[in-house]
Amino acid sequence: MAATGIPCMLMRGGTSKGAYFVASDLPAEPASRDDLVLRIMGSPDPAQIDGLGGAHPLTSKVAIVSRSAESGIDIDYLFLQVVVGEAVVSDAQTCGNLLAGVGPFALERGLVAASGDTASVRIRLVNTGDVATATFALTDGEPEYDGGAAIDGVPGTAGGIELEMTSGDRPLLPTGRLTDDLDGHRATLIDNGMPVVLLRADEFGVDGTESPADLEARSDLAAAVERIRLLAGPLMGLGDVADSTVPKVILLSPPRAGGVVGTRSFIPTRVHTSIGVLMAASVAAGVAIDGAVGSDLAGRAEGEVFGIEHPGGSFPARVRVAETDGTWHASSTSLRTARKIFDGAVFPRPRL
Image (cartoon, rainbow, N blue to C red; front, side, top):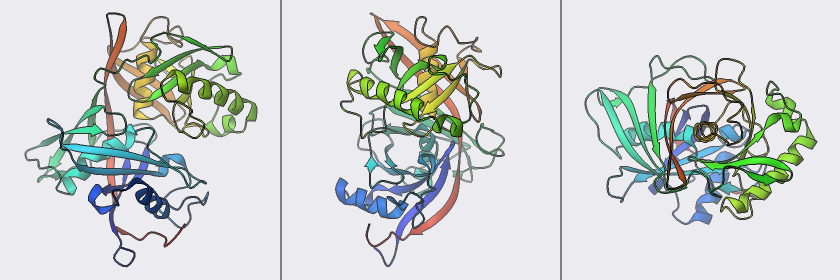
């Protein structure tokens, strides 16, 4: 393996970047797989100088893809977050941005077949059990990465990829309550594909215009956010989240650029330079429910499209929420883009 390398495709998915693998090209045993992934990505070195990682959580990601044995599902997608600066690989969350590249990657690797002008791939998100449908354009049976779709946080334009997500029977509000009191703050705990904690930014001395670097420099803010995150974990059924990357904590503020609500997202220690696909879906679902944190700050949505403002611009999240017998559920559709950057073999470090 060290001599011949491991087949790998480096792709930008949405506003993230990661290494994509076919599952059969990696060890099946999790500990062996994670050891290999660390050596491929370059952790625990904080610069990841000897691997593919880009020294930031948004560029230290891995997608593992395989044909699915589930009825009605084409592809299984396992997401791994490789922690920068630590020898840690987490499968506690999924990633909706890398999800954008899964359908095209599966077609490139022959895991699915498609013909005509478009492909539609049903994807099971192994980390969460959610199911997504990715629809994208084809040219001569291959993914068309070029196009006119623009997303904030990514330069230029590319081929649009529509992601429709359903969460099945999982409740939108894990505690069954619109709000919970955490460390003296009113919080909404919500999971529309990504478990997040919604808080008002002004309660933390944040007005919603600060840069990620400005917020990361505030040790008092980081400590306050982490206290709340640790309290939220057990309430959301996640257990002790001290060493986990979920839930995310999102500070909400009034919109300033024509969107529905402003966000600054802790993921969990760094502040996102934009916002993740499923994080945006969870925010949109939350502010769509009267009485949830942030619903009073929210501007008017354009139909089912919620413009979620973030440090890099705005994310249009199309979300539908409904209450049945006292339980809230949601479904969402997002427009993303993806691009194949490199396809070849990666040569891992021989040891950590």
